[in-house]
Image 1 (cartoon, one colour):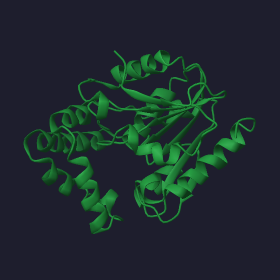
Image 2 (tube, rainbow, N blue to C red):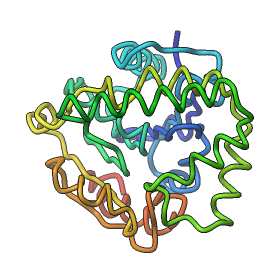
Image 3 (tube, rainbow, N blue to C red):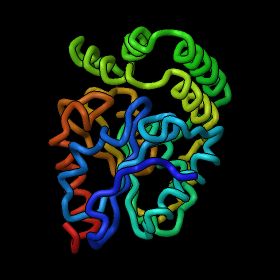
Image 4 (cartoon, rainbow, N blue to C red):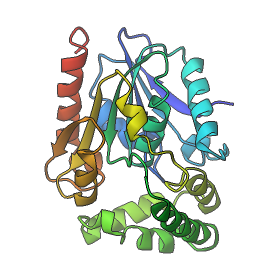
Length: 258
């Protein structure tokens, strides 16, 4: 089994850019930014329970790594950068922590590297279980209205919240609940020590107004890039700035392509 994905410019030379969306998003989430990189082959992935992968399930990060590996293999992707946001960033970091063959670099936007204390894991487990139950049993408009009131989304305006609720309510609550539990921060490894051992370039993007992840950014042993006029979802809030930042990173790292 492989994940549903959309490949663009697959015959182009150079490393692939593999984009991984956040919770309740889909392969379209990164395209406004990613499609500016016309010289590169690009793959936009639908995570389990999302978009074209809505009927695919995963029970653990280990299963998720295998799904991603098989998906990359199916497109014969042998040289690539992983670019992930939030949940997609956590999945990308978890995959990259194995230092897999062919991975040339890692770019993360607002992804948590992992919890190090058991009391933090216990609190997160209880929180995610409550959210999962809401996703399974309540109308998604109601759940997402509450979801976007969380502190990490404090920079959103009321209009931005309404727009996101309208987009996200098209999902399946049952599928989202399953993915939330399978990839909860409570069961994610603390990836910091593993990532520090990897030799590939690691860049971290963070929105100017995302105070929680600005604090985390300095702790992930990566080159950190601040995206102005943006909150947690920086590539949605300020796509031009994120595209410019990615171009700067990739121009530095793969000079012969961009």
